[in-house]
Length: 475
Image 1: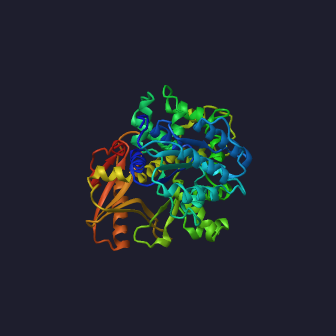
Image 2 (image 1 turned 135 degrees about the horizontal axis):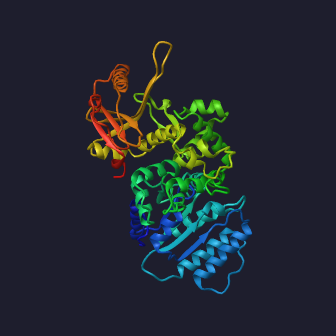
């Protein structure tokens, strides 16, 4: 196995186990565009496969089959292959090639961008089913790996296949974005000398998407990079949005409609509210929401003490949130807009919201910092709607422990230490009391602060029972 991989140890362990098993393995690697699926497989196997093929985007069936023949010719050292009439012919030829290989280890087949091969009436999936069920699965020496950025296709046609591939996938690997720690490791290996405050801001803009991080010029500041990647003329991440959603989802316009709707409702929406706003319902809406959640664009958040029907769907993709906030519909010709505005009040407000989201995605690290990693927990949020007499209030992150203790988390983003004022201390006390009464909570309530650089010690900081800082999120 190559050593260039950052993180991905769990995924590599899966591939290792599959290679040493006593059966043929059908493994799919899927995830959003730019997340590193091909890189993972190539690095693990050092680019050495018994057969590999990359589907061509928008190529007709005849050209796909021709390219498959060329790849098979290169792998088998044969001078020529008769033109394949269909994908059944192509997989028959692949069977002959693999059967001719004499080796103790499993014979590895890597099909990259599989969704691009499946053109209308191509019968590709049917031929794949026939290849796997009729030949490969009956042997014990085939390692078949398929990847695809079109996650909706991978979910519908492979993972949830109701035909010949139903329950035939032996392992699936979903690649998630890097964590903060993995993002830092990646940037450091590329010579980046940013401090963790800058890396945290970078994460709140790009998330942990390896390709986006690869575009960073580490000799420049974060501000310079954001101008170049998002605001300069022909900036690469300015035009990424449409390509991203169209590459990942079939009928992307419906997905984009829901994503934009959730952007405008940052507190989240129920399925019923989404259906009413979009006119989508039934199986179509369920499929879209399932795929958005599966690809880490959207999350399902549980209200504290509520049943599943009150689950809120929230947009959590950092790139999409930044794009809608600062780039979409941007008509200014200022190539250095970020340089001129990154300290503006509106940007600081956005940073506060984004830091809350970052913390919600790093609850494992928060639990470690609190010393409760070994205790079963449930995370949720809580909101109390206001009325004419009382103001509404909310807690965006609640960590409920199985030992009858509950962390009520206050999340604050600031450049220096955060100072708790007298007014804010009173607000927190009132919020905790409302939470206790509203939920009839008879468990221990712990006021936990999560900040970038800690709390300034003072007469009002005694309200804080436990504390987590930005440094802890890098664990």
